[in-house]
Image 1 (cartoon, rainbow, N blue to C red):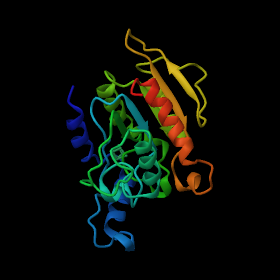
Image 2 (image 1 turned 90 degrees about the vertical axis):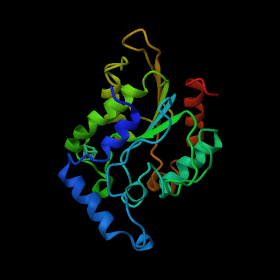
Image 3 (image 1 turned 135 degrees about the vertical axis):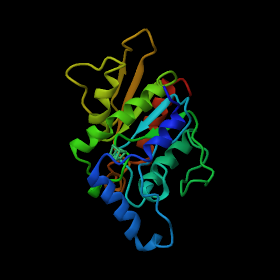
Length: 233
Ligand code: SF4
């Protein structure tokens, strides 16, 4: 099996979804006025964080003018401002801000990824696009598995995408557990490996944070629980 670094490199060349390839490149060409002097990434965005992470954070997909611009998950947008501030507050990130690759941000024991690695129009990938991207996440999780002990899933889309993948290595109950903020499920391994604790958290989108549905304290509480479950507390 190749390394996580190989996977991260290879995914950036993927062009399997025609609609998403067209959209990510169109956004990168037209740009938002505030970023008109910047060169957008405009490609699939690989996961971010150490290859021996004990915690996984799984979102939805890169934001058009966030990660699709900067090339790093949750970097350069409002969602990332909430997520990284919370991660820093609980000791999972070296700083509370994420503006660009090379800004000094380091993650501690945590890897952030997404089930769809290209920015989709209106933040809504199709089922077919989600399924196209599945193999990237399957390989990423297989490479993380030796150290992975807990996963925080941001939002119902990530929940629906990830649980079937987890089911290949851990036992996911039937009927499948329902997504909710603060829910926790401990999954036994299918082999004699360690279990995995899965946590639900509302997505850190502006739709949730601007309305107060999700507060910084709520994110920090879930991250702290995941950190404890992973043995990093
Ligand atoms: S969404 Fe995934 S499968 Fe589709 S083009 Fe992007 S990286 Fe490839």
